[in-house]
Structures are given as structure tokens and as C-alpha cells.
Image (cartoon, rainbow, N blue to C red):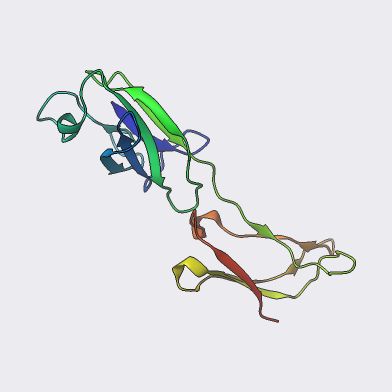
Length: 171
């Protein structure tokens, strides 16, 4: 059994918590954290062997058994994948499963309430309320070369799936 976490382009992502559950989805049998590409493992596979003694997976998974792979925590900057991926545990690692996540995205604008026009020069702060109000980013709404105010996109690496954020206008 080979498991990995990837972005939509198929590149391996480190930091996702993947878990194997029993057929009724009532008991977590194994849990591990995804890895990035590495020498000799360019696709970031985690391999679980069916032969006893090779990994702890052999103590929990029975060859021919029906199980589910489920992501329980996403890496920073990516959405949590809600899918339960059904599989059969087989000898020799013939089953390969990839959990794919879409990147998080957050684009914001400061607009006039009446006319809806973008407002330049506003200083805005994004805080992570789930992480004790930690400041994620502060920026000033900017004008591009043509004189148009541009929406601001927060770097996805600064965002965490499942967190609650607050936007505050400083000035």
C-alpha cells in the first residue's frame, strides 16, 4: 500500500495527516504525515507493507481487508480533503492512493459602500482568530500603473484550513 498527498498538479505535499480507518469508519487504525519529494522518492510515497514485521501497519491491517483513507489535517495553504477513499489492503504494495487538495485562496478589496468603487490607501490587517489573534498580514490597498485599485491576495502559505480569520481596517 502506497499513500501520498499531492497538489492539483500532482506534486507531493508534506505535512498532511492521513489516516486509515476500518470499513465502518468507526476506528482509526493507522495515522501518518505526508512527506515531500526526496532523493529516491520523487513522488513522496509513504509505503506500508503487508508482511508482518516490516511496518506497524501489518499489526492493524489484514490482507484483503476493506479500509478507508481519510485526511484529518491539511498542510498550511491547502484545503482539507473531505473524501473517504475506499481501498483493499493487498500484498506487495499494489494499491497506490493519492489524496489531492486544492490550495486555499483569499482575495480581498476595500470598496465604497454606496458605489462599490475600490478605495485606495486603506490599511487592512488580517488576523487568525483561531491562533489567538495572530496577525497574518497587514497591507495598504494599492493603485496599479493604470490608476486602478487592485484587490489584495493573501499568500496561501499564510492560511490554515479550518481557521477563522478577521479583517480589520486600521485606517
